[in-house]
Length: 310
Image (cartoon, rainbow, N blue to C red):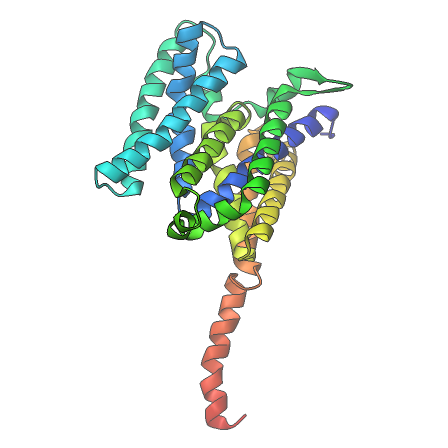
């Protein structure tokens, strides 16, 4: 099967989606809040359904506003339950996202009885169809999903560049953030808003499940390779980009080898991200499996060398 312009747009859309997710994903992983991406990506379902019931249309803007609003509420509810209910943050995430996800599924299934609202597209996305919905931006014509994810990517970049120091300090030492005169609570909710909006923007392309891989796996891979924030963000963006291109290529090439007609490109992108993480886990220069084995081996050999005088 040959690579076409259609495939290029699918990979470009996946790349923009992956990079826009990787940027806030780095801060989620650093704050040990990886599950928040999972919580928000599932909890936005009722926002989609409520937006449809309120407007009677499946236009992108009301859907985006409804889902983003519920995503932000998810972060607020989680914080409130954790803070005022004296509940572990992980447990608070589980309470909020399972409740909202269940409400969302009920509402979507009810809506799907009357309109063409496919629950599987909500879960797995429809990135293969993105080149069918083109928009014109000046002299350029590109998929609407690529334009949306590209816009969110630019917004995330601007926020991180302008507030890099604040995001960095608040990720490692919220107390110092308060001492320096900017609110750690504001930085927390700003990051949660970024995650919610980015998740919703990626929702249509890769669905509520695959977006979790795009938020977390590139950042976790980058953390195995570097311990400095700027290289971590750059590596995470590179891993996300490579996952998108490699994943769509594998989605085209692998199924025919097993007699399968096709497979999900977004699923293969997540699979490719897992492959890259595994490679980093094995070969990372300091935190990789081989590097740690060599260090441990050197530690065991050192006493023997001391005893033998070698």
